[in-house]
Image (cartoon, rainbow, N blue to C red; front, side, top):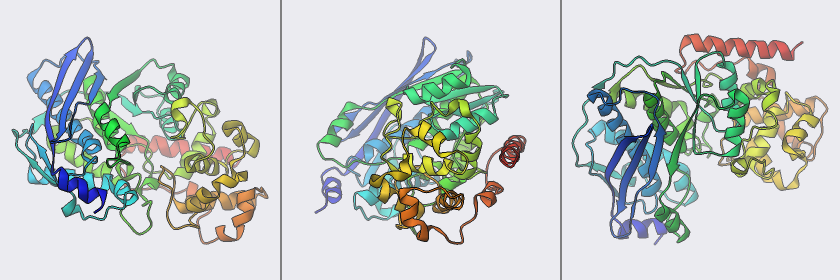
Length: 452
């Protein structure tokens, strides 16, 4: 019997028992109560900065209540996955049939990588039944006039592009917990003058169970960003939540399957989230990815021009908390490759500290990124065709490296050139037309600058 089957047999239910929030000294403090009966209770916490003064109004408090409840639903995924109980019971709120289906879809797709890497084969219908026993939430009219942008920042190149293109707007940065890479980017942007930081604390019991061999793996963190950024925008009067997810995030990680490391960064999730949150609250707060019209290679072109960030940005998940590039993971190699059409070899080495295309240890990552191997790495990286386009550009310019020379014959194909990629525009996006135009103009200036 597999661990998955064993744990589901031993722990048949997961419970979302309650949630609590209070406003205290300019902070909204949140505690959730989860349990796997017979195994453990969990009480993760959040703290959000509060910048508005009218939260004592009843309908405003009601909005916060429903938003916090739904953030809790998102948090349950991290704790549910410990045993993958066949039934999740929501005791503190009622979900309609359509809402329960919405969450079942997020559970299943958001845990796609987790299931693939744990060898779990189960259908969406079989994974979890979500039942609710609490009181229902009525749709709430929120007539507050919101203004300005909230831009989530993770310390990588993508959010830098959003910040720079929108820098003339009323922008507040947003991040969850502090790490040096994020803080360094925010410092370069505006010295942290308009920064809003939420604090998320995981329950130690979950971390202990992970060490004991219970089920563990990737969860849809960007869904956490979605709900928490919406709460932060609400608490601070911000109208536009501008993510920095690109169209490349739509491509599956495991070829020919639904498994996508970036599912909660995809257009599909963005659309689902927008529909779901507007079924709960009638508000003019808008959640969208500002960079959705672009591919990773276009974002790289724009970022290459923002030189003041080149020494501080970090996209490496392994090293970002320490403010370093680990230089030995697929994410580091991807960023190196995608920037290569726009930066010289010496500029790339200045950023990373070494030439990553000369590293034998990155051979497997190179093959996965370029599509020589069937599946992409489980990282937030661009499409296979973008990687090949950047590498073809590298070779065509007469540049040489260990890895490009080794696989040169397998890289050429009918992939689009870098120039063709730069002129694409993904029309399936939620970006207001006014701000699409700002992004178009920035891209045009970038292309003109590279051609002069």
